[in-house]
Image (tube, rainbow, N blue to C red):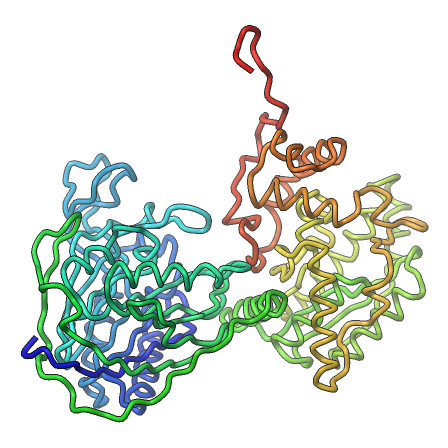
Length: 610
C-alpha cells in the first residue's frame, strides 16, 4: 500500500441468469449488469462462475472450437465494456479458458501446467477460469484450483486445476480471485490468500440448489473469511439449467464473520456493499510460492478512490423451507421452457394431487395462457376426479379440455387380450399416447406428473404417466407434494387470492384409478413410511443393516429395496426434472441397470470377532 490509512471501495455482486452456450448473449448480459453497477457507482462488480459459457457446459468443454470462442469472447467483452464507457469499473467474470498442455490428469495426480506424457494427450487444456477486466484489457486470469467430482459435478473429467493465485491491486485494495469449490476446501486458495496478505477475496460461484443448502453457505463463507483474514464476496448464479436450478443467495462476509449483504433467492439481483478496508490488518504482502500455489501480483491502481458517503447494504432473509422448494420448482420449469424456446405446456389432469400441483407450478412459472390441461377419463374414473380436475383448471385460469379414453381402451382390449396390471397400465399408456399427440400437434411440451416416491418404486407407468419432456416434481416425494400444496393454498389465502389447488385433491386418498376402488395404499406402504425409507436408501445411500438400525420395518425395507432396485431401467427413460434433494435420480444417482448386487445383512464368518 502507498500508506496505511483505511481505504474505501464500493463492490457489487451481479447474481444473473445465464444460458449455456450463449457466449454473445451472456457477454451482453455482463455489459447490461455492469452498467447497472456503474450507475450505483461501484468500483468492482463480480459475476458468477463460468458466466460467459453458462454452467454447467458439460461436454461442450471438450470442443476446442467452443473453448477458443470463449477466450475470444472474454477479450471482446473487455473491449466492449470500455467502448460502452464502463472501462473504469473492474469486472470479474467466469469463463472457459483454454491453455497449452494436455487434458485433465487422473484425480490422484498432483496438478501441473503441462502433461505431455499423458496417454491421451490433447492439444489444449480446458480450465474453469475467472478473469478481472479493466480499462478494456484482461488484467488477470485465475484457474479454479479445486475441481468437484461428486454428486452432479464432473469437473475432474473436464478441467485442469490451476496452480496460481493472482492478486490484483485495485484502488489500493488487494483482491484475490477464487472460484466456487475453492471455498469448500480448508487450507486451499483462501488459506493461501490469508498467508499472502489480501484485503478482499472474490468468489464467482455456480452452486446448485438443494434443500437447506443455504444453511450451510453462511457458516462456510465465514470460515473461509476468517482463514483469508479478508472480506469474501460470494456471488452465485441464479436460474435453471436442465435438472439443476441455482438459487443465488449471494453474500458478502467480513473477516470477523459479519454478514454485510445477502441477495434474495431465485431472482436476478445486484447487491452493492461499501467496504472500509484497513490495510494494516493484513499480514505483510507476499508473493511467490506459498503452500500449494504460486501467488502473483498485478497492479491496476495504487491510488485509493476519493472518500464517499456510505450506503447501507441489504441483507435478505432466506426463504422458509417449503417456499424455497416452491420457488426452485417454478424457476426450474420456467427456465427449461423459455431457454429452449417452447411456447407452452400440456399435462394430463386426473383430479389427483400430483397433476393439480404440477398445474399450479406451471401456471406460476408460465402464466395460465401457456398451460393446457386435458382430462382423460376412463370407465374407472370417479365423478370427483373429473370435477376436481375441472375445478383445478378453473382456479388457475388455464386452458382445459376433456377427451374420454374408454372407447380407445376398449378397441385395444378387443384386439389383444390383456389382464391384471397389463390391462391397468394400458389405460395410462393410452393417455400418454394422446397427450404426446396433442403435444406434437400444437407444439406444447408434455409435462410428466410423477413424483419421486412413484419414480423410486417404479409406480410411474413407462410410456404412460411417465411420458413427457420435463417432470417438474420428479424429485419431490409424495409427502412433500402434500406439504407444497397446503403451503401454496395458504400463501394464496394470506393475499386474498383464490387457492389454486382444490381441497378435495389434497384430502382424498391417492389412487391411479386404473381398477375399481383402487388406492395406492393397496400395494404400497403409507407414504410417510415409504418416503422415509427412500430418503435413507436413495438420498443417503444407506445399506440394509443401517436401514434396520434406523428403525425401519424389515418387511417394508425388503419390499421397497426390491422395488427401487428393479425400476432402474425405467428411470433411465424418464424425463429430466428439477433437482431439490440431496440426491436426485438422474445426474446425481447413477447405478447400473444390469446389476446383481442386492442389499443383505452382513454375515459373520465362523471364528471372526463379533
